Amino acid sequence: MTQPFLIGDSMTGGYGGADILHSCTIAVEKGEIAVIVGPNGAGKSTAMKAVFGMLKLREGSVRLQGEDITSLTPQARVRKGMGFVPQTSNIFPSMSVEENLEMGAFIRHDDIKATMEQVYELFPILRDKRRQAAGELSGGQRQQVAVGRALMTKPSVLMLDEPTAGVSPIVMDELFDRIIEIARTGISILMVEQNARQALNIADKGYVLVQGENRYTDTGQALLADPEVRKSFLGG
Ligand SMILES: Nc1ncnc2c1ncn2[C@@H]1O[C@H](COP(=O)(O)OP(=O)(O)O)[C@@H](O)[C@H]1O
Ligand SMILES: [Mg+2]
Image (cartoon, protein in one colour):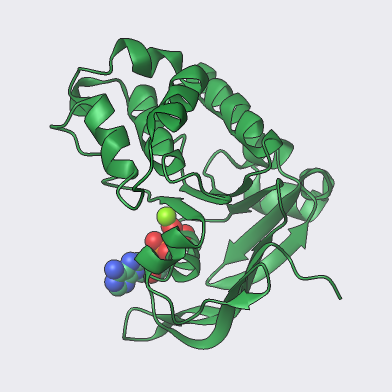
């Protein structure tokens, strides 16, 4: 049997009190886009934190390219090739855009210029604003900084928790186009999204989470076509 590139397998756990995740499984293949959707409070962010090692699992495991990384710290996971853009506080607002990117490369001891150049090619507006404080940028541009910062470690898998939160539909479309571009370079994308329809539309694989459990798992297109999923989770 082939292993997924990254899998949080049958994850059960929470924040110390009652379990939030109940045997929840999330996986992504190399260079593919996997999207997690579901109602507020379903445990989407908790599942992401669990995969990134910010939550102690009571049961289940996390495996990256077949290696069990369940007991590794988030920092150690970054060294293994994982990048994470959390839902909140994902930039340093008082630092410049360029300083944010430099901070993103904290684990590297080699020359980061080429990677920074790649980030600026992906998000040209960040080059123009590189000396500006990141906190002064628009919501969409701040999300670009956050994604760019995570790319600075040259991850093999990029985890994004609601990257399009609070941005206009046009900015959302642009950001999704950039995310597709990132995936085409071979980087796996594991993403939580509120804009469920649009996100499933670009997803190879989709997960509908409800109350910390997997409710539906299928290709993005199959979920979009499923009458039950549409009625309950996509607004009809
Ligand atoms: N740091 C925390 N400590 C305790 N409970 C939390 C914490 N973060 C989230 N929760 C709880 O976990 C559940 C799932 O939250 P979350 O994973 O943020 O959901 P989602 O991202 O799907 O909206 C909610 O009931 C929430 O109140
Ligand atoms: Mg969340």
